[in-house]
Length: 284
Length: 87
Image (tube, rainbow over all chains, first blue to last red; front, side):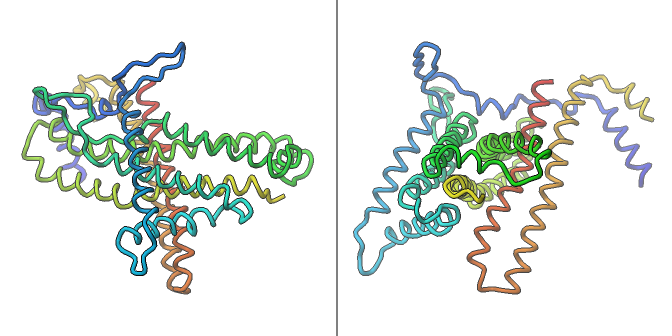
């Protein structure tokens, strides 16, 4: 068995390179940002790129979604419209906001957490709907492709920065600066404090990184996974592979749409609620 | 044997090393996260079997734990992609 394996490997290595002729395919080109409408304000680059276009569409969709589903008249027999609205509201309230926020801060921070949930959910979902926004054309017709704005680190970092800033502003506002920053220092023997306090401060900034990288890398990896599986056809230059590759791609697509998209939106909002809640009511 | 294979290798060895690094990084990250996620769902099944009425409350915690654990793969992936691109 072992010998057979070794000889097969050797044969594969000896096989001429032309047997594995490679087509040109690079999934990372899908995530490049090109300036569609350049806007440069001094050193600040505010150009409209693919990610910005997706974000704009998602914002409009979020607003429409809210108006359509949440502003329906309360009927005696709730229709499908009201049911969906209430379902999302219920998830946002009981699963996300009440997990982290203390009741005294509920009225102020529930809207933020809920809209964060809805917005990320819609940006992520929009990322799995093929849209003619790839910026490439094929015989004059724009090609359709999938791209999520959240698979760009700038977008998720901006969202995480919002939570980061709100956390500390709220912490200072409810507890006063002295009491709030004192709550960062845990109870420990004096000599250990020199070691622990820098770690705690570092931990506050690590939250920023983990919050943004989690969403970013999840969406990026999901898209790259699907694209790479479909791209195997082009890399190995055979259409026959479609029999194996397309079903696997569809399975990953469904996994992403059904599970990952919702969970990532949920996690981002829930962790925001927990961070803000723990700053308002520090444990010690 | 290894020497023979190496002698037959004509391609770019740096590229091969990078590819191996990328695969190792993602693979080991996935290994750890797989154990962690299995643990989470295993404990979830156990606790629901013991107290089915707690299912709703546990589900929120379960998904939180799932996402926190799953993110570890992506830290590995990100690190290895950085190594792949930068080195």
